[in-house]
Amino acid sequence: MKQLQSARLPSFEDTVVAPPSQLGLVKTIDERYAYWRMRILYSMIFGYAAFYLVRYNQFSVAMPILNNEYGYTKTQLGSIITIWSVVYGIGKFVNGYFSDRSNARYFMTIGLIGSAASCFMLGFGSSLYFFGIFYAINAWFQSMGWAPVTRLLTHWFSPTELGTKWAFTSVAHQLGGAVIVFMSSVLIGHYGWQSAFFVPAILALVVACLLFNRLRDTPQSIGLPSIEQHHGLVKDAQEKEEDNLSSRELIKLVLSKRLLYYVCMANMFFYVVRLGIVTWAPTFLRELKGASLMTSGWQVVGYDLAGIFGGIAAGWISDQYFSGRRGPVSVMYMLLLIVCLCGLWLVPAGDQFMSALTMMVLGFLVYGPQVLAGVASADIASKKAVGMAHGLTGTFAYLGTALSGIGVGWIVDQYGWNGGFMFFIIAAFLSTFFFSLTWGYRAKVLEDVEAEM
Image (tube, rainbow, N blue to C red; front, side, top):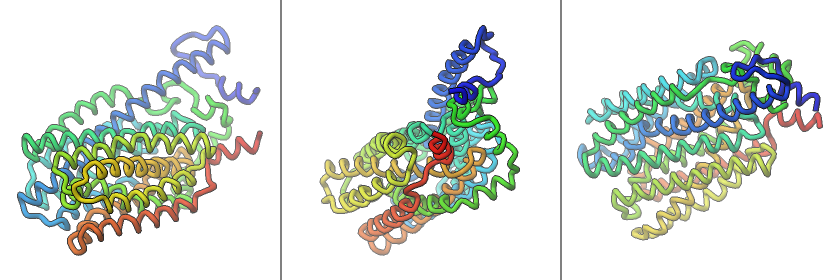
């Protein structure tokens, strides 16, 4: 109890209410923490959802139109996704490093503004070279989006709750993805494919202004103790050890983590499936399942919305039933995902109800490992280097996305959609294997607390 009180009662000068006693100080800090945690949480969710409005999701919806209007092959269209993925993957690691040393409020806002501007310019395109250049620019600014989110998550929420809070924040992926697919389908159907780039870009600029107003960097930046101190998980001296690490030592620390490379490999093969489905769903639902543009759009929306519940469930289960271990839940989700991929492949053409239902189950299962891979990278790394660690796993992930772009495009051109689904299933098996290698791991601070009990 004395350790807990000393962790929760650091000598901070309260700038809101002059404390008449220690009890008053604790109450004031608790109230301020509650307010700012909620404000940071909803700002991250809606802010990162806006990144998805100006990502490449509308390009996926527009691909069948571009194929018909300009005669581009699936391999050519897939090459644009590959360019985006390679630049994004490199940017995840580089910008993860800079994000760890930057104010998350400024870093995230700049990324959203740059993404919106590049998306707006894409509406003027027609040639593959034009799309390639501006999607490369878009990818770089997009890679500035999630790194500050990981910084905010690990500074405002403790490891005992990180899986659940990370999952809630990851709702932004599904929220933004569902909105832009539906919006793009409506805009393209009524105003042409260019409108699917112009309108979301303007909306994202508005959200960028709101994001700058709402966010703050760390608890310490507004006069609060660290979250670990506030929850009584560490002493001040333990945090000072991390503070004294140089940038070179932090990089060496991240790159020496063997378990982190297992997560990287699992993420790479997982993203072949996750981004492969998102990217090609509007196309294969039309060609393989006989869905209209609007119907395929609605099915992808269902996929994203179901993912909200899948991600939250995965984070909560790993916190509550596996004591912060992410590996077991990831493996269970991946095994069920393989079964569901086989089901989607075998759904008869024209059966839109079963196709939509299978897409929803697939979405539920896909977003569990996506959430837990990110949480695992944060558990393994120091929170002083969480952006870099997550950036490394993201770099591997988008190598997988690169394969799902031009790789799936080439396979389908050569072997049809049967070959494409076989590729997804093999990748899912490999991802399951690497997730299984992290089965028993959880954050060091949780192991230390348990050892002291």
